[in-house]
View (cartoon, rainbow over the protein chains, first blue to last red):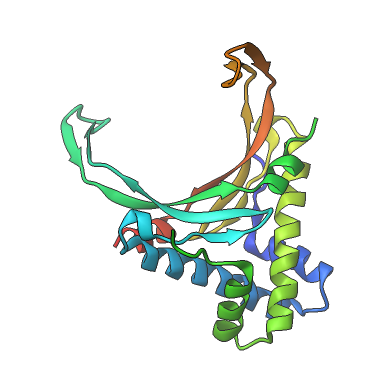
Length: 104
Length: 103
């Protein structure tokens, strides 16, 4: 199993690129994750055609999508269950992120 | 069409929440938007089973996935063409993020 990159690894790398301390960088990252989450929670209460996205040009956008209700099956028992409609957070990668990741 | 939330809006809200200056908030957010693609680009060079994810507990994880080559069609001309295999960035929302949005 590979070693995943944690928030604290990310904070270190971000702080290395700026003049901001690690402590403050962590504050910014934590606040960003909270703000995006809160924003999408607010947008989720609106009808889907009125919802705004959080759009970070080049990087990508965070948005809310609707999932319809569907019938599923309990994998243990095989029993049919009704999965209710819900709203889910989604990310759509931007052009520059896609290009950088598609290395040969 | 609703007006989307831009990076500037996000910086304002981050600064409010953290008590840090807009300047530092913007510098860190800009750096984050560089670091994540750089990290994923490094991971993309590794075989799929050795790749690491960027895991932001509660929020979600960013990772690289492989897309196989496939046959597509030019929608204008109808002509068949080969779409080559590629590597794509993907995000999987975490438990807290999902629960907060689905309320």
